[in-house]
Image 1 (cartoon, rainbow, N blue to C red):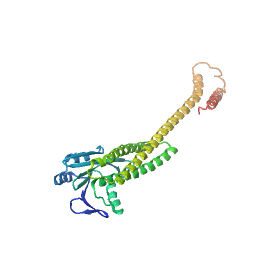
Image 2 (image 1 turned 180 degrees about the vertical axis):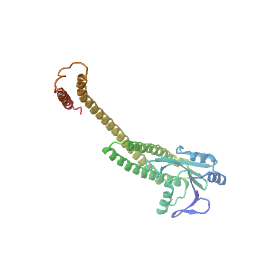
Image 3 (image 1 turned 120 degrees about the vertical axis):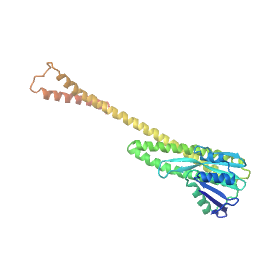
Image 4 (image 1 turned 90 degrees about the vertical axis):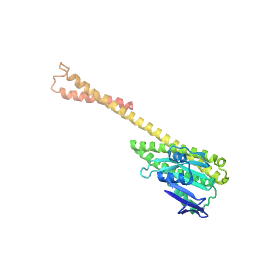
Length: 307
């Protein structure tokens, strides 16, 4: 869907038609939308193809006077609470044109508009607009990281009570999300560092510093959570291994104890003459002997702390 926004003193105001210096935002464009912007404003088709690639990394690219800035933004699938990933957001600028394209649903753009309107933020040049979008994406990285940390704490408490495969698989899903976040934040950091050298207009130095600080904080937070999650996974893997060893030790001890009456029953089950085999109380004697020998074996196993 194509929407036009005018940046006024109180923030962004949606308009019915495009005018110079308007922001053109396109969410989940179809073939009609992409063909329209390429024909109407001369956007290179290669830019659209690059933005459509979910694995595209943050970078700058120039073609036909257009500058493409690709930023990685976080996405959370509400239907799948554990699924977090990142997608490219393309920002195309040329003269008085500012066009953003994203092929996925994102909470970032509506929040970016609402935040600008609440704070009465007016953006008067292209580099500051790109910085504001990077700043907004970093906010959502931190927001989703907090959700991941809360979920991680919940599953850790579950595993402390009982080690379950479902909880471990969920933690692996969160670990994958943190890897995506870490890679995307590193790319966005490199992008922000080069921003003032790529754009012809001077960007706000204070805003650039704030963005770099927020990106650094988000990157450090991801690294901390990755370390915590990795240590938790290693700890629970050791717990599972110890539990398996304890179970095998217990089963082996029981097998040794049960082997004693089995051995005695095997001897007295032979078709040969055996000692005390013809006595009237032979059966009770065999049972008592098996019980006593099994008790002796259990005593020594117990003293050895095998069970």
